[in-house]
Length: 284
Image (cartoon, rainbow, N blue to C red):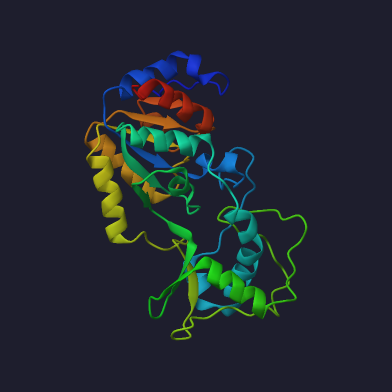
């Protein structure tokens, strides 16, 4: 039987919310977050309610074709200004408070925006990498994204940032005129550069996933916030929790692929729900 689903309004007053509090109280909690946690910081969600249908570039396309790389880097460069100024919201801060109080053992996130670390969470496993780093696919050298942004601005002075940018998930915008764009290359070996994020069609590094799985396996409950669980890595962590018979609370507006397997599903915004949970679970 599917779990109960609340309406978004006044989630902290519902019986389902009380059930979530009862399940989590006194337990060490692991947390998995997705794009829905960052929407209140102005970063769009790939799959949330009202999100446009998108077909993100795959790793195979990026690596094989310079035109794809031009399109990616031109759009990413334009969107990076908006992406980098995003600030943590109440949901990020609530999770940092829960970790500081010893309620959670950290956060596993599918997001690449770095907002959990900015909010004060100290143990964060960034499953899909971080948008503030760039890596060379040939020699493995890493660079700060700011360094690459400056290089791209110098090499492409014609590419003026528009007054209004429609920001897509992961900090890029759609650009059609990319023929004149100069793609950055590694300053060490002249190899191909990509953001240090996991593209569609690319695997999460084995060591990173092992750390995330250990965090879930070492907990006594799992909270999944703002994820539709369409990406395989999220489902695998849910299955880790279920194999250990951990209670699972899912907080997400709309349907997720884990709803029928959750102990409690809260169809609500993550910021208000995580804040309300922190108020109840953090003992003064």
